[in-house]
Amino acid sequence: MTKRRSIVVANWKMFMGPSDGEHLAHNIVDICQSFSSVDVVICPPLVSLTKVGSVIEGTRIKLGAQNIFWEPDEGPFTGEVSAQMIAGWCEYVIVGHSERRQHFEETDDIVNKKVKAGLQHGLKVIICVGESLVENNAGDTKDIIEYQVRSAYQGVLPNDALQTVVAYEPIWAIGTGLASTPYAANRVCAKYVRGTLDRIFGYEVSQAIRIQYGGSINRNNISEFIVQVDIDGVLIGGSSLSADEFAAILHVIDR
Ligand code: PGA
Image (cartoon, rainbow, N blue to C red; front, top):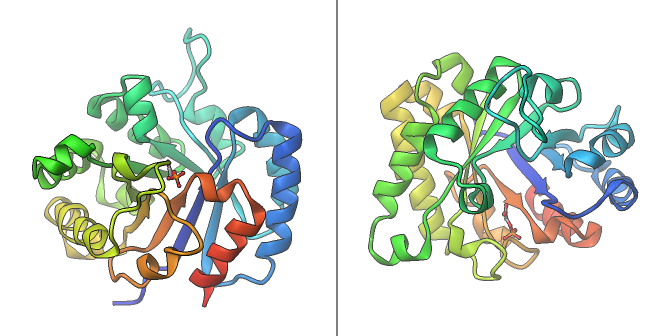
């Protein structure tokens, strides 16, 4: 089996409006010129997509959105943006981030619809899954993750599944400074995420899909995570808002 290429996604969340985003994107472009063995995706807020998109145009850095609506094309859905609209700008979209599940009541069914909407319009979909602290303490991680993975891929064809990335992000590790341990994270990625993908799509497809870890990644802990066999990259929130910190992380991954 050939090694899966690493993928690092910067999730800027609701930070970096157009001018701050443009500035940070310029810095990241400078940093990334020397990196060749890692895919880098920047996901700014919607209003910053055009500015950031024009800064990274012609570079190896890809643009992603943080969310789409589940109706794939268009319609009377005030305030929402569709996969069809995003597809003109972005190559990637994040779907099912725990902050959306938590604050916007996105269910597994909605996440599944969004996955299919994104794929229908040729987007590469980054599907987030993760258990809460209560679920983790109760020993329910396996059941929760396997259920979220199965639901997200309901009705998705194997060829389309190859256009997805899974991000395993334990909710208790996001923005808390308290990352999972590399061993525990790799175990979830290998057994519960890739294992479930194997049962749905078979060995070849499950081996080809990249799985990221996300949650309090920084320059000090990245080296332990990235060497894990089933962790093919990271989804980074806070540490992606500083060009220096982001560069330090990429340096370790590109080694
Ligand atoms: P964090 O966020 O790196 O700030 O923990 C990760 C995420 O929410 O994707």
